[in-house]
Length: 176
Ligand SMILES: [Fe+2]
Ligand SMILES: [Fe+2]
Image (cartoon, rainbow, N blue to C red; front, side, top):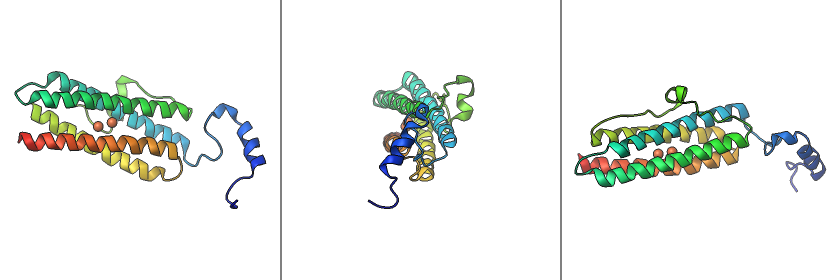
């Protein structure tokens, strides 16, 4: 056993202290308040992305619209799943997930969009995905080894955002 590992007696004793903190132990290596606030910014981003794609799904018209609209709907549903994962992690860490609609667009990294033309919708979705990708990549690097579970949540979400960006780019290239 390496010197860096805590002995069993101490581990057991520590686990009994601060039982009210649930899964958060002394071994937690990140700034928890900052992590919760970053998670809430990402939650706002995912809710705005859910709404933007939903709006695009219902308003996509034109000859090219059907397959694109189907993709908008799928993305909207996946953004909702991301929002749920983030809210769940916030509560695991003892924080409060912020669903306040009044401050949603200012807290979100990506923007809402109400374009009327299909091409504009696709372009705005691609921009929003690129914002999410850049911000989640930064968050993952910032988390480092301090909170592997939160890091894993962001890594799995990041993978989907990269797929979303690829989907939108493909449409954009075929529409121009
Ligand atoms: Fe997402
Ligand atoms: Fe996305």
